[in-house]
Image (cartoon, rainbow, N blue to C red; front, side):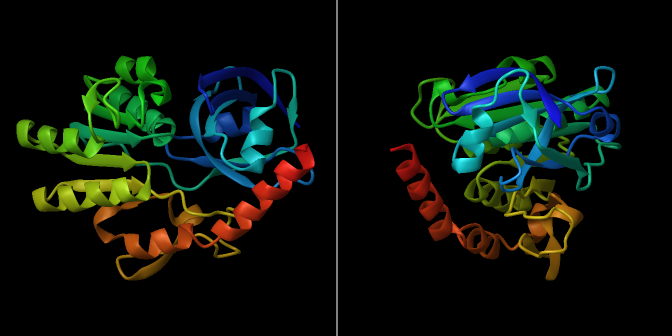
Length: 276
């Protein structure tokens, strides 16, 4: 069992949990993820480790309540016990050798972006962070990002805060104004990451995306999260989740992400009926 040490509501449907998991905290690096089950009958949920404290033996996870399982996780309070957590999984991002990086987070992708922002900053790189959401109330981790960024830009779709528009529009301006950018990291909705990849390819800038495709077992056994990168089949869970953005087959990825749409809708309908 893994005890919930703290809970925070970051936005109407976005929650942050700090969980006691000393062995995982000891080994985790920026970019690693965990897979958890809320209870014995729960489905396996892959979540990036948003932060970790080796001294306290804790990890932080941030998630949006979308389906039945994430809503169940969102109901947990301090002192509650999570049934299973496996990790750290995946490969962490290599942060050495970069002097100037731009990192973009869209929506809840900002939660995945934060450990990378912090990691690059602590490695001594100049960090330019860009975060965005549909509206101001969905902007998360602003203070945390500002603490570890040399420059921070914010965008909202409705113009309620920061730039009125998309994070990719800010990126375009940054690429025009800034020199000697070594790396761009983008995490968020697949269409956003594809747009970033198309844009940075024109500038010849190395770009990494974190692909949160459907994962089930997290060990590469099931093949549910397979994607094509550079013409080769890769598994998001064991080969990633970070990949060279310019080699990813985004069209295939979007098709795979929509594969279980009907099943997810059935689960939501059944959950509503049970509540009634």
